[in-house]
Length: 461
Ligand code: ASP
Ligand code: MG
Image (tube, rainbow, N blue to C red; front, side, top):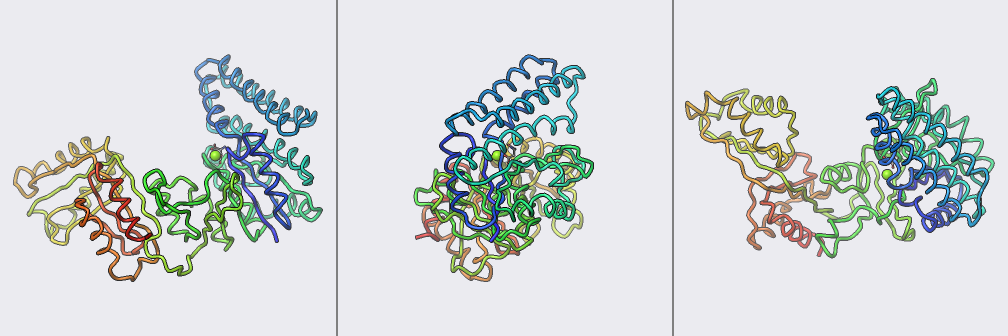
């Protein structure tokens, strides 16, 4: 049994959390690889420090680095109950190096993506030795390991792409021997290096990605992502009182939900594990016996229809309408050329088969700009009345019911709309992809929470 355990920023940020991390790791049988984030907030602080240095405020940059170093020295002393000379030296060395980088940035008044990666790597590089020391202290033989030279990436600094084959080869050299001696490698999340050894990062929140890549590289039996919530919920618990954690999710369902802002994980980041057939479990460091959510490539039929109800607000709905639009090829293309030219991402589209109207949902703040651009694009058609109006409704929200069990199950839509209709919630527009994984509907923003509650109640009674 081989398990990769990833601990996020809040899981490594306090002595109490670190004690949990040790208990969890200890309780996990077999070979273990631990992957850690920087402590919560550290990466943001480092980015701000680099920006301050870039703008010439080297004092501010160095002060915030010194504060980070101090906080981490206190963290490890509090977590261990004594001062570990090794860890303090490690933090000292890394701080010195990062301080020099910040000074160089200030002199050059320039912080390239490559330099930024070198600076922000500090966060994970100091959390790994802290976690390793705490594990050791709790009787788990552990060793901190930088992912530089282990997770090999291309040179897209700031959002580098791991190269799995290379990483596999390095993992066989670096991790396998340690695992066979019963040692737990504590690997820095978020960072990697090019084959030549230049530090890279995998993008914000990238530690999950690191963990998934390593899980695939060592063919783990399971990837566990420990965070501060007990998995992905059936609805936002702030909106729906009896929202429940979901036991299982398919990768596709997880992707749908994350689009709607379920922020627990970004499914794309766990794809390497999912593709390798490794189950990904989302668990809570602070409630480790909670079942959590398991994400797998395909969801077995668990009998649910709508698994989760979610929403996204502060949007605008634009309707382009006119009898002269129907049957004219290229009309929709011109609508979307306009959104593309304005750099506006379209969140939902719906067109009636009479082709008399196309409606699109876009972020609220982009709505008026898009209306203006569409009016210019269809200036001639508007004058001829082929297009009668370009109307805006806002603020609106998209509410989505998500679940693979909806596919091929008749009557789901009628239950969704029935629940809303009975409660008098007006539906402004509707879309369902042919994947039948998601029914999305547009309601006025003021009806958003009510709509989520009604749909959730309909399917989770
Ligand atoms: N520390 C990095 C960030 O905050 C990576 C992570 O936490 O996953 O983006
Ligand atoms: Mg994080």
